Image (cartoon, rainbow, N blue to C red):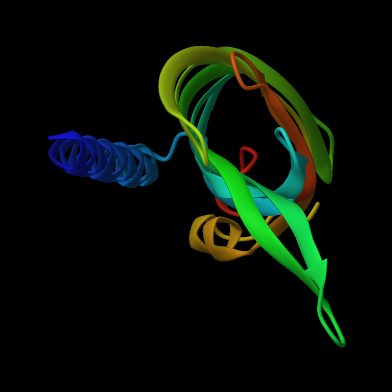
Length: 194
C-alpha cells in the first residue's frame, strides 16, 4: 500500500511540474506577442554538500517566478546522509544512512543588479524521511538564499532564455529532521527583464 501511495505522489508531482512549465512557457509566448517586458521566470538545477543526521549530498530542481521584487518558487530536493564503514585496502567505504525528499512552496524577495541577483526565501514543505530505522512524513519550514550571475548585455528574448546562468545556493529546512546544504546552481530562463 505504501508503494502505491508513493507512486501516486510521484505522478501528481510530475503532473504539477509539467503544468508549471507549460504555464511558464505560455506566459513567455504571450509576453512576446504583446511586446511588453518579458516575465521573470526561470528553472534551476542545483547540488552540493549537505548535512541531515550525517554529512552527505543534496540536490534538486526549482522553478521560480518573480513579480516586482516578490519571488515565488516550487522546489524539489533530495538530501542524503552517509556514514563511514570499515576501511578497505585502498579506499574508505560509505553507506547511505538516511535520505529526505522535500516538496516545497517558497515565497521571498529578489533584488536585481546589472549582472547578478540576490534572493532569500522561506515557505512550507512536505518531507518524506527514510532512515535505516524508520520512515516518517512531516511538514517543514524550507529556507534558501541565492546569488546568480547572468550576462549584463541584453540579447534577444530567446538568447536570454537559453543562455545558462550560474550561481550559489544555501538551502535547508527546519523540521523534525532538519538539514542544511550549500551548492552550485545552473539555471535557464528569464532571470531579468529585457
